[in-house]
Image (cartoon, protein in one colour):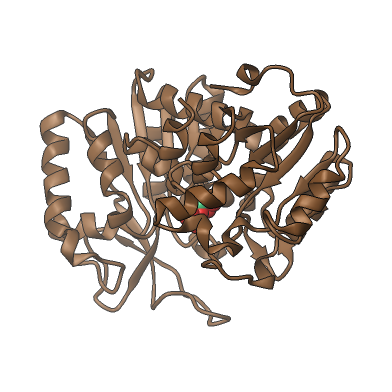
Length: 400
Ligand code: 3PG
């Protein structure tokens, strides 16, 4: 169900679960992408003159009030973006929330304080969560689920509350589901999937699901060293998950059997160790099968950057999740930049391209790429990965 199914919302109290889990440095938001992604739904509701009651989490305060994880900076930024006041309630469903909601006029916006300050929000006890969700539900007339980044969680404010009120997906959730489905169910081919990030163990489900769907799998990031080791290469002090070696060998076999082209880097940028603090770095390019025993791989090398870029451009659908290297350090950002540029060039050539959430989405923005150069930048981290794994996501299932 989508927003339209909720009918006329004018004057109604619309409870909206958003994902405002943004990166913070102190009280400064370093990437407001998730807040901007919520604007279409908020503006649509403003256009209907609804009363908008927003719910969100920030970080993992584990059921305690952690002042550093207050949504105050989010309320401030959102207010700048929508051009009107956003009132922050001091609690999620207590006296202050109730009073602030009761005082709302049509077209007003209230943001409830971090839902994860309440232990019930993430409780494993369903009855406890359900009782809590009823208290939240009492604040609204309808529920809109727009926090795509949390749809893989079954938590009070995104899952249980949907059972207590007429509920529908917001415009962001609708857009995310459409984009990710377009890439995975019946994609235009070739379908190239680019995976990076530190751990292969975070991506097992995705690789398993996509080994039967993709035409090409391009692998970089910290996880690639487990692949290189599985091929018999030495990887120095690079990240390695010994316990996944057999699994990865299995993937290499399956790729061959299924005719999936597996693209691995041919050269690697290495350094004496992981860059820490102000310690100077000494990047060096070596062949992927000749990483010195005392060196750590931190990015894909220039030949691999070209190779990955060209493979991406030679695609009709591209899904990318995970940086190619330690992109936060300029000397190890070129691999991630080359992949992002590949997606931009592929998009220009008519391909459908998705940047799958989390670190890759912030990388794209922090490296200065224009969001318009990609067909879709997902706001989900874990959620987009679980979607690509082909799993049923509780926060979506509950809306059906
Ligand atoms: C995210 O950052 O991926 C979402 O906001 C979900 O956060 P979580 O992993 O703490 O549930």
